[in-house]
Length: 233
Picture 1 (cartoon, helix red, strand yellow):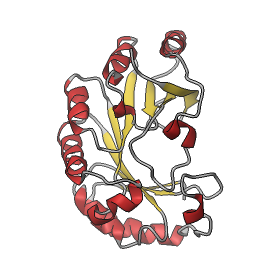
Picture 2 (cartoon, rainbow, N blue to C red):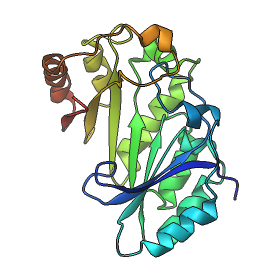
Picture 3 (tube, helix red, strand yellow):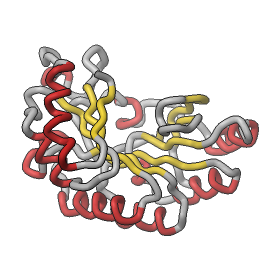
């Protein structure tokens, strides 16, 4: 099974809403978001965790954990991610996956195969700002397609945007919310200031948005989605 895992957190009460889960990180990403702090996972500068080790761990946690959250990196980079998910599902666990939305066909296949119970998609920015926030050129039609299929087909889901002053304006929240109009759940996230990120020079002097700013942004997004929530504020 060709899935590269770079980390395992044995318990989380936060990553899968309403569930007790473990978290695994996949290695490798096709984005270079300037605010990303998972550098080791993005660049592959980490020791790999054998898939068999994770599956053995899950065997020991049957009845104690509800789910496994798969994050990265970008999990859907891995062609065999569905095989890994099936092993997890066969053990009775729910599966959550994080994605940047650039692999809609693979995501569609996973949803159709009932291998994903919860999808968390980063919607980085309004369409015209996507390349700046992703750090690479992005095929935004794939982003739109992923949003569409998640809202149409996913068993449960959330969208999220990390708000970085200078890269995003408060008014951009309304534009992003328009892309996901009618979505069940939309999180606005504070970026992590005191960690090493991909573009340290760009963000070293950035002052985060305040709680009042986030409440203002929440009010901008709320009319367009079922629920707008704040994370890390």
